[in-house]
Length: 216
Image 1: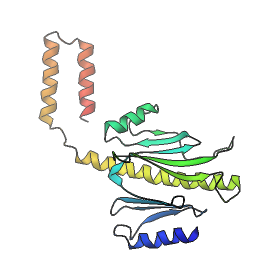
Image 2 (image 1 turned 180 degrees about the vertical axis):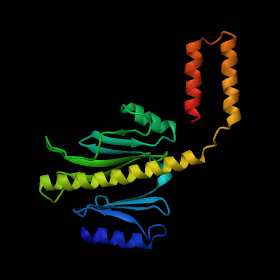
Image 3 (image 1 turned 120 degrees about the horizontal axis):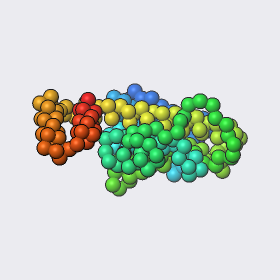
């Protein structure tokens, strides 16, 4: 078990784009999670299978922390409608964080499985589950195993959430900014509709405020 993780680590160092990387190695020896900001890539390895995957930052739509099939945390990108649908389906805005990962927690019931799930821009493989803890296959005592699994899954989700924020910010800076003249033209059109009686005062104010917010 330890050999496979070490071998994966050595191979990763030889792959272009993973020379200088941040990494999480599970205390159980089950998996390795490696990210490289320079080349914007993520590499997973899990001994069950074994499973090995490499993802580009730009392909990530959302990340979820799942405990026994229940989503306890979710963060989605704001770059596409897909991200918006994921967010709204869970009761939050696009790019919203559902749940929280910081602060003390009390385990009130046995947890049998902890997973990280990625939604991806890939028609052939649109989602990826990464198992961080399984009560029936973990080598540690149940309580210790759950603690390690949750801690490591949380770190992975934190890293990927930061990646989502970074890519979203880069995307926003690439969007064309509206010119002052185009905003003025839109305001003139709204004022003309109000003067013609097509819009009442309240409708004019609401539309004007929305226009200004969208271009702020």
